[in-house]
Image 1: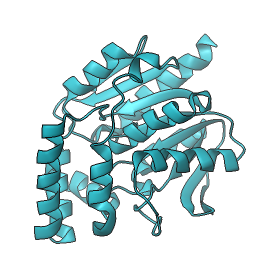
Image 2: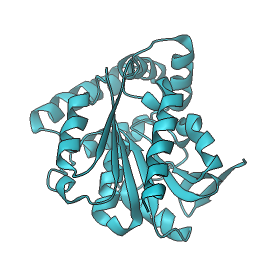
Image 3: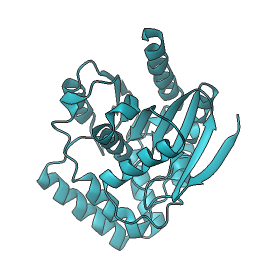
Image 4: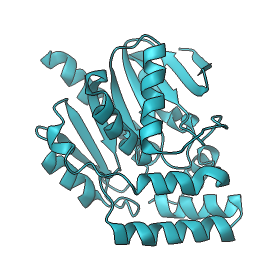
Length: 259
C-alpha cells in the first residue's frame, strides 16, 4: 500500500489503495492526515482524503461555507473520473457529507456520518461562536489545541493527546469562518429524503455533538443504522480506531453482499 499526495487544481488530497471509492472528510481545525488510523482500509478501498478550504494545505480558499466545502469534494471526485463514492465525514465533515448528498445525491453510494449534526438552534449557535471567538482571541495556537483536545477526547492519555495534537492544526485566519459555516446548516428537511444506505456513529461521552443529536438524525433517515462507541468522546476514529475501522468495513461489506 502506497500513499500518494496530490493536488487537483487547488484542492490538496491524499489518495491510496484500490477498490470502491471511499472519501474521508475531516472536522473543524483538522487536516487530511488526521485519518491516518483509517489508512488500513486502503487494502480494500480507494481512499480519497481532501483538505477542506482553510485547512491543511488549502491556503487560498476563497469563500468559506459548507456549500463550497462540498462543492470542492464533488469537483475533486469528478476530476478523478469517479462517478460515485462512499462519503464519510466527521463533525464538520459530516455536515459536508450531508451537503454533498444535497447537491449531488447520485454521487453518494452511502453516507457515514460521524459525531455530527444537521441543525443548530440560533441561541446555541450564538453561545458557541462567542466561546470560539474568545478562544481564538485569547489563546495561542498551542492553547487552542490543548483546549480542543480536552474537549474532544474522553481518554486524556499521553498517546491520545500526542496524536490529536499532530492532526489538529487550526488556521486562525479561517477557523471562525468555518465555525460560522457549521452553524448555518439546516438539513431538517433533507434527512427524510436520504435514500442511500447510511451509517450514523456517535461517541458515548461526546461533549461537542452529544450522541442524542445523532440519535435524532437516525430517527429521521429511513433504514439508517446507528452505532454508539462506548468510552469515547468526539473522535472515535482516534480513541477506538480498531473498533471504528471494523464498523466501517462491516457496514460497507454488508452493502456489497446485499447488492
